[in-house]
Image 1 (cartoon, each protein chain N blue to C red):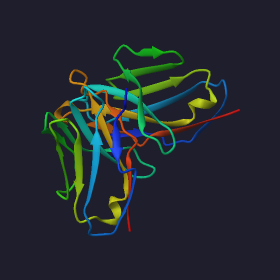
Image 2: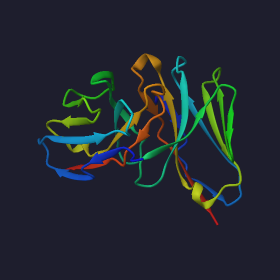
Image 3: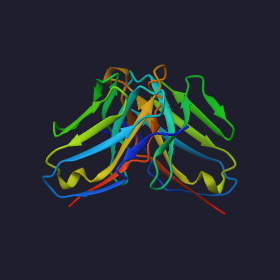
Length: 113
Length: 111
């Protein structure tokens, strides 16, 4: 079975620009979460979505937004990029009855210059 | 103070050694606990859940001490392939099902 997929794999943007990252969960998984991982640190929770509704939000500014589509895929949007937004952005999916056992995609590495 | 704290290491051990990692968490209401493994420049992968009674999976043993808010992972008979970063992860039910990760402990197993 295909795992969680994310696109693009790498992205370079300049300060002030906007970026959209995409994620497709494992087939049958209805919950998608987004995490930011800065080099040398553990992932930090950004959002979780289930059945197109936001179920949780981490401590990130309003420049970060996300949504989930009817096919359970998801987008993470970041506006007005800052240098500090450079990180690996990870998407994770989970089954209905095991909301905490999350399977991660390979991530999108974003570099802001 | 970080919500989930781990010694970043690195722990350098020879093949065959036994190594233990510890982790402390700050929220006494935390309900679920996990160890994830992350290889260099790869995504985290679930290694094992941690249950109150402790649990074992092959060479790996996880323990939870709720009173001390402390989680441990023991790896016996270390293999070269165990070299990775081990992430301690906690779920706080009052925070919308989010997972809180520690900073990770890096393990390097040498021949």
